[in-house]
Structures are given as C-alpha cells and as structure tokens.
Length: 115
Length: 114
Image: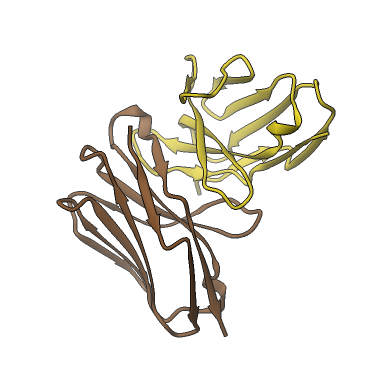
C-alpha cells in the first residue's frame, strides 16, 4: 500500500519551454503532497507543500510564478516548471501523506534536463 | 525554521560491522523523526521512524534512538550487508502542524564492503 507514482520519469526540453510533472497517489487519498528538488549528491530540498483544493505554500526562495503547483484532487498534484532554464535541471520528487499522518511516501522522481 | 545536521557525510564499513549515523536538530517543537534510504536514482524509502514520546525503536537490524533534551537522534544498523549501501537521510518534523513538513539532513553515503 501507499504507492506514489510520477510521470514522466525523465524529460529533456529546450530552454524557455514549460514542463509539467504529475504526481499521483495510487491506492490512497493524499491530503497533502510535497514537492522536492534534489541536485546531484545533495539532500532533498522542499519546494512547496500542496493541499487539495487550496493554494500551495512555497518555501522561501522558491518562485511560485516559475514553479506552478496544482492539487486538483486527493490523488493528483502537478508541478509545472515554466520557462525552464538549464539551471532548473534537477531531480524533482514528490511525496504524499495520508490524512493526519506524518509519514511521507515518495514518488520515483522525475529527471529534468533543460538544454 | 528547523535545521538538521547529519554526520558523517560518508561512512565505510566492512560487512558484518555496525554503522551509526547521527543527526541533530534545532527546533524543540519537532516531534517526528524518520529515516530514509535512497539508492542511486531511486526514490527515498522510509526505513524507520520515531516519535518524541519514545527514546528508542528497533526493527530487526535497524534501530533509532532519540534524545530530546540534547536534540539529537541516531540510526544504528547492525550486521551490515552490501545491500545496505546507499544514501541515508534523517529528517525532523512537527506533527500536527505545517501539514507534516519535514526538514532533511544532508545525507550519509554508506558503503558496506564485502
């Protein structure tokens, strides 16, 4: 149980284009979803916290107009990287928690490469 | 905000030895402390967690200890095996607020030599 999927698993795009990443909880309803970015050999950096039906809460230093988050249902959250640049290349990972539980279940991640 | 420090950054042991990874946190309100294992290019996997109402928790070869007074917690792996080789992350969070937001440590690269 508690499976989280992400799509796509990897994407290569040209600078200036937008990329959408989907995060789905497959066998549970996720009250809260989290989006992280992980650079090579570094830790997970929280970008934003997303609750179904409400606006995402962004961490300090994360541009909300560049990283658009939508949490339209209890099983789906999307992250759109707008006007991507090479410095946005990274591993983006989502996680989801169930109800009031603290436990976060992670998706497999999406490798974004911006040329 | 919360700040989590993790040591060591790399740890090399022989198969069968024990491995210990330590973390400290800054926010006394934190009361949930999970540990994740991440293999290269894969998702972080929860291996054990502890809450502030207990001081120690064990699951087979893995144990976690928590000292709330000193604000530190540790992961202990006994009888290490080559498949334990991975990056381990500790994290700290405050249950019931901030929707379960976690702050992660910098990670420890564990290598178990056969």
